[in-house]
Length: 539
Image (cartoon, rainbow, N blue to C red):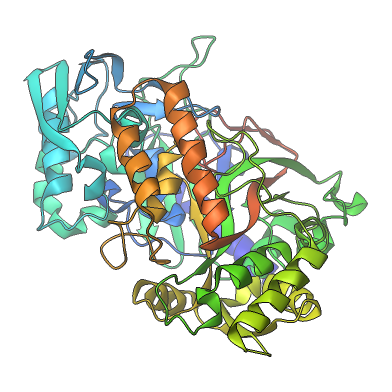
């Protein structure tokens, strides 16, 4: 396997030489200037209108820009918009665009093979996002937008239907990237595999399920703090080995430069029980970790028949009290992650204040189960947890712990796609789930429990509905002051804790492993891969 993949990467480099020779230019870079990673989940599209899953978002992020962007601290920063103003009522956004941003070269642009980005390009891109014929998964980002308009080449305005303070954060999503009309119109649906953007890297080749190659955009507009042009790398090469174990072996063999995340297949090999790099890898890899805006949880379906055990508030609370999250993280996750004892809003988000949630209280859990049995006559309460294979070990741990407090648990293992479909259709009484932030605001977590967001039209697969919660949620839209809005978020999170429609398991952590010769990789709480400031030295 190692030899085949080394040959594969060699082919990529040879391809670079051949492609540059067509331009009658000498190739003056080698493998030390190519950043290599594997995408085990595959990539379905390079069109930002379909940037829904992380596997697609990462490469799209290298190719495209929007009005604004997030830094590693999740603060909104200028991108193609160099500045903006927001009206006093919070409804009108006026963006002033840079005049030095060019689309990647393409013959369809005519004589100069490129052109400036102007405000009309954003007008087109936003209209395309809303076009039902395009059927973008990201059209919801603009659901609160009334109008948008190019005032002239350098001014773009957006009028909201009602104030929405997190709106700037929404605009950092890759859905809102600018695309050129003439290129999209020419390629149609095939724009997915012929992307032309403005990003630090430009598309070169894609052999689906085999490799994807980007080259440096030599006309990229951003510079580093010393005035040096970005990006530093000459190329990015992505492979598509389909499983995490093979991906890890590629990292060990030096065939890829970077690996993200922790998988059960290799966690004990690379990490100690306390979450440190094992000694044999300390000279080979760098490891960085930090808060990840991802809450892992179990969701209860709240509108089941009243005789179902989960319909009992007593049993839902017993499950929450009935297992030790600290031990679960230590032994099941090698210490990577934070036990979710503070509600649903994850650590790392503005608005997280460490509310008191559910800790391990086995005696309290037993008393709740006993009370449930007395009130219902159900002497053997039995529940079923649906999950995919990646989380079976966690569910089995919970199963063993709940048995000690008198709850029998079965585990239904199903493919990820089946699990998603079954949750959407409301076919599961308890399902393991996770929620990764789309944008850095707690509203993105709490809207999962809004009464009008029931599946299949929204993400509320628990079918939780609470009048006070809904009123607070609606109040956040007209609360412009951040401090006051965060207080509303905390009240909403307190309701979720009290009503227990879910079992928060842990707040995940970003874990990145890279070869020792990689510099500037960085990390952020949404685990966005940004390569424009990454450099690589010869080993």
